Amino acid sequence: MKFESLALIAALACGTVYAQGVEIKDAWVRTTVQGQKATGAFMKITAKDGVKLVGASSPAAGVTEVHEMKMEGDVMKMRAVPGGLEIPAGKTVELKPGGYHIMLMDLKAALPKDATVPLTLLFKDAKGVESKVEIKVPVAAMSAQQH
Image (tube, rainbow, N blue to C red; front, side, top):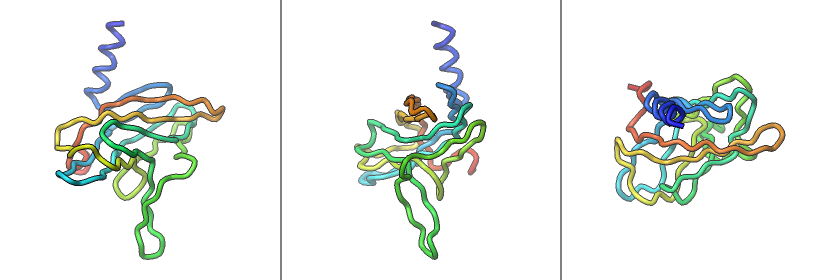
C-alpha cells in the first residue's frame, strides 16, 4: 500500500499519471482572473488499448465538457465533441490551445497561477466499459512546453 502511494506521488510529481491503461502527461489548466467564467485544461493522453474520452468533471466548474476548436471557413468555432474523443491504441492525443481541450465553464472562483484543479476524466472502451481517471492539474499561464 505504501509503495502504491509513493508511486502515485512520484507520478504526480513528474507530471504523468497512469490508470486503467491510460497515461496522462503534461496536464495544465490556463489561469483566470476574477469574474472570468471559463478556461481550458490541456494534456497529452495515451491509451494502451483504444478508448474514448467521453466526459470530464471538476468541482471548480459548474460545467465541464470535451471541446474542439477548428477553423470553419474564416471563423474559429468551438463546440463540444459529440460522442467523445477517440484515443487510438498506443497513440498520443494532445489536448492543446486551439484544438481539442477540456472546457471548464461556470467557474466557481478565479484560478490563479500555481493553484491546482481536481479533474476527473471519464473514458469508455470498445466494449462500453467506463473508467475514471482522477488527477490534480496545476494552473499555469501556459504549459512548460510553450515557454
